[in-house]
Length: 338
Image 1: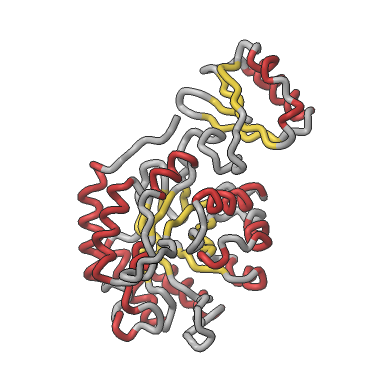
Image 2: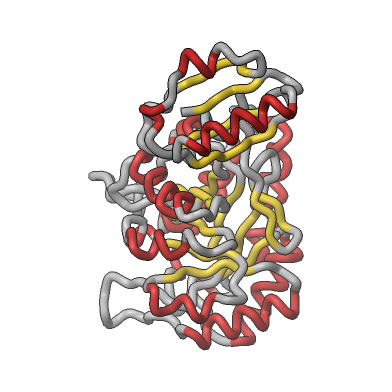
């Protein structure tokens, strides 16, 4: 349930309303916008007399939220959420490039790529340390050593870093990681999501390969229900009958998610297509659809990459892609705020 207040409500009446709602055992989430303030009510709202609240002088309207996701719901939080980390901003009209190799291989490799993508326009460095692979014989990542190398690249470039967590037992290695990524295979690892809800750092959740958008939003809800409201949604392609690409990139997810939710939406065209030649056109299409950012795999030598070389682009190609995307961004800004 949300209570929409009139502009500039009387402070004493507002305080009395909040105290009364809390006395009913409800948790309040307050969203202050430019034109209105919204009180989001979490808990058993059946105890609330809607007509009584509507009759108050400071109340504009009261609405029940039918969707099962509450915290992630745009009705609950009309303004776009903006994630800020290490000087990089994402969401609310702030477009961000997240770039780097699929997996961290050596200190020389990650530091070189980090510097290159920074010069090309990236504001956040990505790199896999713990790698979920379909085959147990494929390279599984450097683990804790990979995070150490990412932190070294962060020290050299100043770029905040994002890397994937696979298991709760790995959490001890993520103290200095700026954004924790939950991969597609872990999107419904609910115990992991609950634990990440206790943190106070951004969490990027990738859509599962067969997950609906509501299921993705419910995964975000698990994190937010724990108190961590810094969640980023990522569309990385879903599994369909098509075999020409690694996955099928669902660009309609961008306007749908941004209509339903206030959370930033990022597109990963690298994992979605699996082909370097398709990354640029899909990146441009994602920007045109209104995405808040792009996650791009960049490698200095894709042909000899230890992981996902065919979908990785060179630093030079990334710089050109970023330039082209920035060129169309002024024409691709849509407002979903209510």
